[in-house]
Image (spheres, rainbow, N blue to C red):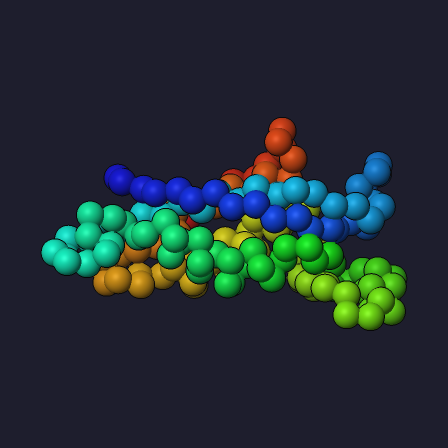
Amino acid sequence: MLTITRKLEFDAGHRIPDHKSQCRNLHGHRYTLEITLIGEVIEQEGSSDNGMIMDFSDVKALAKQHLVDVWDHAFIVYAKDQTVRDFLGSLPDHKTVIIESIPTVENLARTAFNILKAAYKDRYGTGLRLHKLVLHETPNCWAEISED
């Protein structure tokens, strides 16, 4: 199996409403996202992608369009956290992303995987697909999700 991985970073805020410690407060992280793709190597003479599973600049562009630019410098809020939704709604032009699960790193990884899975799905007819996603919340804490 041959894979490629592209790493990107973004900053976002969140809170874990029921957490027993500090994470119940509004706070943010410098997230690191690792996107691992699998597929056949493109073999098309004269093509810019010849010899690649996917050009790393295209991996980055799709991740930015569908996820990174949406979440970067946003506050990611659990849909049922009405107090925070009301507060952020009172701030003019605040960048808020509402998700259907508590924004733990595990749930954010799962949400990101589902978003990017659709973005990369077989773009070249080479079986290209998202194989694994790693989301680091801090340098020492992360979640991994794969297609298995």
